[in-house]
Image 1 (cartoon, rainbow, N blue to C red):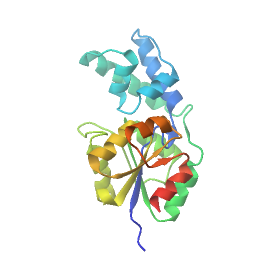
Image 2: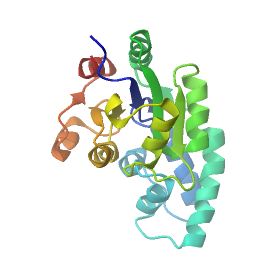
Image 3: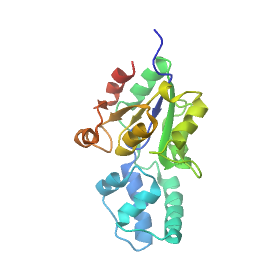
Length: 217
């Protein structure tokens, strides 16, 4: 019997990698540089998911004018690109899941709202040889929960929306699933807990990476 899916696409932060400490360090570097109060790692985790612009707005609890925001984003990117892997590490069981999927013949990819260059750098360091394509946040491509980066990945993979399943961890991933119709599994080992994900209406939940397999096979 043929497999239902041809490819498995993963989110990055909170799904494959625990990036919380390094994200918080770079956000707080920028906040402190511009005279704003720093935030806890727990705050930063709660603010993640919609890209760096939204993260900074949430961290400051106020709207930023475009000029200031652009300057802060530039400084964040410069700092994060050289500090993205200080504390970051794959979650326990991730390598075993990826190895199992490759052994079963699935093509693997990443679609993240993390800056594209940082997404590629982290995947090159921690997951060299695992992913056929890595798509991060880039200019002129609508990021999750819109379908722009998902469809870009599909083009690169040569797949249709019904030939993939997406593995994420957050409300952004859930809303992306709603907007695209692609199948979804949400892991509860990352940045959002089971009760919160269930409150969104999510039903396919995995407590650990190995549990993802039962939703794919």
